[in-house]
Image 1 (cartoon, chains in turn yellow, orange):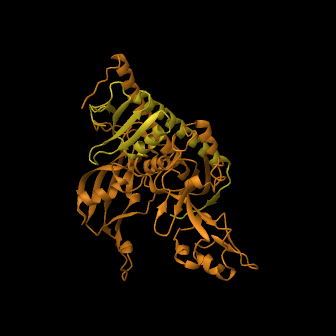
Image 2 (cartoon, chains in turn purple, cyan):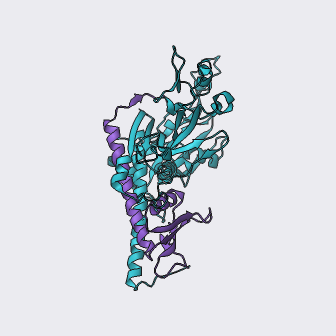
Image 3 (tube, rainbow over the protein chains, first blue to last red):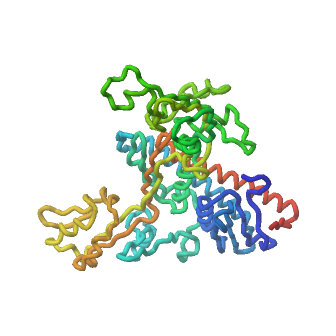
Length: 111
Length: 364
């Protein structure tokens, strides 16, 4: 990461109570953008969530979140990040269990 | 249809999970499991429900590749892991080449580029990423020495035309790379001394009088910086094909074999006696979705081609030091690291905004 660039900042034009905000996340791409967007949208208090890569040569993404009931978009973002982490842990566990217990075909591949 | 649309979400035949494949277009591509899409249904995030639906099943593994099913996740999640496997799981590769002598026909930079591509057997977990200062230490840099000089073989058979017999070192091979341990590396890499994964890669051809003498520095990096750091040959997924026969319009027995030939081998079974057509559940995943069956008017309405939107068939081929079964967990680890970094920054932003009485700092 380049020096002095914050990992996240809130772009101007956000609602004062943060019920609607666009977050600029530095050094991230579609990988995190789309997964995060999906998880934020799983929150019923979210009115809208979308992400974009504004320019391919700028190394950041924008994530727009708008909330119902004047709730904080930043809190929704944090909640989604926590949930996304739980999801990753669940997949990791399921994969480890399958690798240990499931019968699968083992074959020899010549390189 | 209404009975199927109920909560039997585990069934492959739940139409909500289907992407429809028509002759000229795909329908119902996007997932609809969001709050507010279906009236009176709760689709908010629920870890317990997710775990119930999630299924990971390893189906095939070799010394170099692994295949597994990942079921019950959104495409955005599956795609995140695929992208991370290709671009963000770290690997150790030769990055700097210091040339002391090169009298061969290949110019320094071309040969240096070639050296970078050689896969090394170094476990990236044993090394650190170089920081922005670029300072080389024994924790972040491996040093290799490449010295080869070609000479005539005096004892070669008179009538031989084979360069391997006529000369010593007629080829520079990846096995010519010699690791030079620095600092504590001797003990760190004691179990597996750093070397190319394949000792027989031909890097260059030499003739008598030509020689190379170089020092090579290998560092840890990620595939988004340069493809040589990508730990996989391929990391891809397919979405499970689903073939649904229409019971109201069975395939005419005299056309059964023609129908069978419209699909990939093994996908459609034909009963030898009755010539009744059925789908082989085990082989259904082999279907290439050529849509050949949709070209024939006599089969119209007999069958529907679909894909199961949340059923991913992963195939990962390792190239480099990772055992194939280790790659997917590594991608999850990288994903969780990224999430942790963003979380920390967002947390700081939150406490910052609370500290200033809700007056948010709006730069930009």
